Amino acid sequence: MDILIGLQWGDEGKGKFIDLIGSDYDIIARFNGGANAGHSIYYQGNKVTLKLLPSGIFSSHVKNIIGTGVVVDPLTFKAEIEELAHIMPTQDLFNRILISQKAHLVLPTHRYWDIYMEQSPLYRTIGTTKNGIAPSYSNKILRQNLRVGDIHSDSFNTDVYQILHRQYNELQLLGQEMPAFEELYHDFIQGCTSLKQVPIIDTEIFLNKAIRDGKKVLAEGAQATLLDIDHGSYPYVTSSNTIASAACVSLGVSPKLVDKIYGVTKAYCTRVGNGIFPTEITGQAANDLREKGAEFGSNTKRPRRVGWLDLPALKYAIMLNGVTQLVLTKADILNEMADIPVCTHYEIDEQEISLAFPQSAEQEIKPIWKYLKGWNTDFSNIKHANLLPETLGAFISFLEEELQVPINYLSTGPQREELINLAK
Image (cartoon, rainbow, N blue to C red; front, side):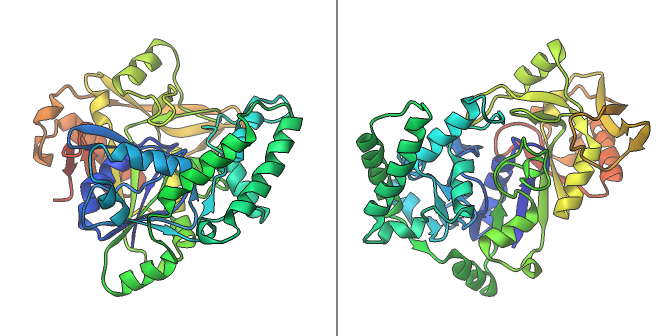
């Protein structure tokens, strides 16, 4: 099994890379998060944002697994299927999807808990997507949630009604605005119809048998390393483990079966929401980079915070994940810059730190910069590694030396074919 993860705060271009290499695999398995993810893929000239579905959905021979560690919103799942039905037959979609019966459900009241906690002065504002992800994981840990496999239970409708009714009343007492209860309940039950049309199975058994039979499996991570609930910039993180080892836990596959670990990073940094961002830039330079890079959330459309490449944080992410090869994206966005800033160290309390990610916002973090010569070239003409401008080649070599991991793939644009295999 191979694993692909993001090394920054998300939005690195994981979906595009999986779309490119996905046809080489028999199975692509999503292992964390929920509909708060947004992997953008170009299919038949259309830009498609996948929220719950794995990124191999457009390859006819690939089975796409939604793993145990994912939280599944039936309404989002249904909407995603209906949207994709405009560009491919619905039955083809259903034939390519398998869902873990142990994956937990996102209930409609979870969304309203998310909204309430983001807006209430009684709680810390995190900057979530308000998709109900954290409340679903919270109820999972409290052992008070429902799982995907429960939808086939005779008591499912009654169980949903009771849980929704209790949470609905609690939210009403807190003053949260919501639609009528019966509307909320019936929309959710109706949303579950799409889930009932796909196989709901013990995906860990399916995956382990497939690996024993020589099938190629790619584990797809959502969000990214610096948003990991344990190792990221807490509390401004996602609600799941995003690092490579989480794929083994979520999918029920032994670490002994892991081979390649792909890490995807931009040539600069972006972040959505609150939290530490040592290399963040502001003002006109930030606006220009944001516009040129189209740095707006694929799911939420929120403008992303932007900054220059952060090597101490990137080294930290590579260490946590055991990355074996890197994918570098959006170097084309830095085209026409005379110099490219890269943070090589932090200065914290008069000490230089080259491998770390600060946890305290109270620390004064001073980035130490190195400026590399930029490039000015037509990226549409770059189809092979030997056509790279010399300064871009030097930039890649510098990163490889600093990070001690090869950059095997370079993205040269947003389309799936705009990616060069540098290892060839």
